[in-house]
Length: 161
Image 1 (cartoon, helix red, strand yellow):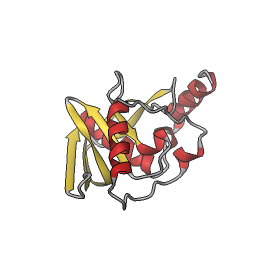
Image 2: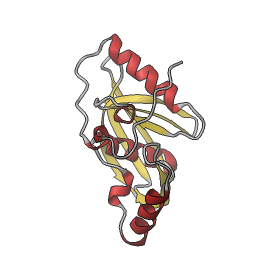
Image 3: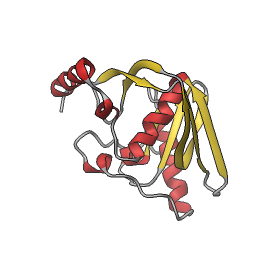
Image 4: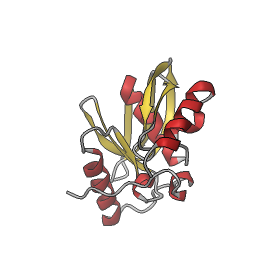
């Protein structure tokens, strides 16, 4: 089991859009295994490859008894609204209420290049949206506005370095 160290806010890899996966080899298999091992730690729901320093379009998830990964994910459908608390492993010590879609559907491929579809509601929908944002170089705090943004920025300033 390999748990990779996390990249934290301020690391440029988190702000760089990830490249699509084009080479399906043993190095990619190792990356996926590391993503799965790293997301399995208690208190974790999702993990994008750039959060462990790899600028490839891949993420893992472990939410509501659903566990897996997707390569080259695309958020293809959303519906409804879901307002709830959100946090990020790469922005420790900060959480905020964030409006997301109540339903989300992601399409991508697996290690064999076969199509994969993941869809869910509630926290899984939040996770799918959060992780696809990461792969575009976006953090959840970027979309916060008003008092929610001000409160998150206060938490960020107070968080241990």
